Amino acid sequence: MEEAKGFPRERAIIETLYATGVRVSELLNIREVDIKWETKLIWIRKGKGCKERYVLFTTECAERLKAYLATRNEESPYLFCNKRGKHLSQTWVQTVLKSYAHNANLVSKVTPHTLRHTFAAHLAEKDMPHCYIQELLGHADINTTRIYTKLSAAARKKRYDRYQ
Image (cartoon, rainbow, N blue to C red; front, side):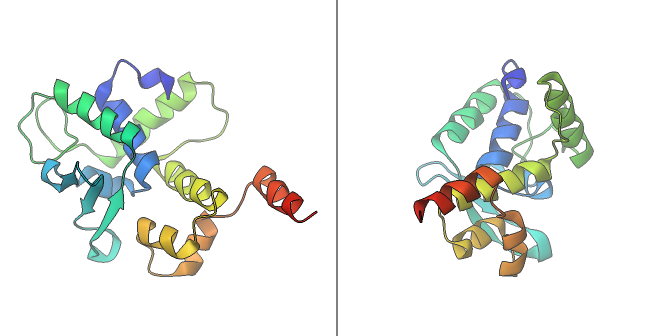
């Protein structure tokens, strides 16, 4: 979101949520040592159900994370922390996202989970197989993934038109 431009931490949080599809709880538990820069992987130590997995991140996400880390002075094992080095709360992330969405005049409600759904839907629109999306999201059941990957009306029409 353009509104986060002058705030590298917030911009990195928003980009990481969107680029990886992680849950907000997973995001807040990422440690700097969990990031594998050369392979663009982040180790999710404790996902839902205490499951571990790796998620991929984009070059743009890497740039946002590096820009944030260049400004960070706090001593904390966690990637995202407040100015005193303390763990951020899920409520804080939700409030920041709501504020940026409001300032960007977005009509619909935007939450960290909205970005997770958007991540999955965009991968589905690019024809990524559901089993890969399931792995990235950390879903135990493929049917849960299918809820996330419902195509937009425009994407449905585009796919339909391929067969005409």
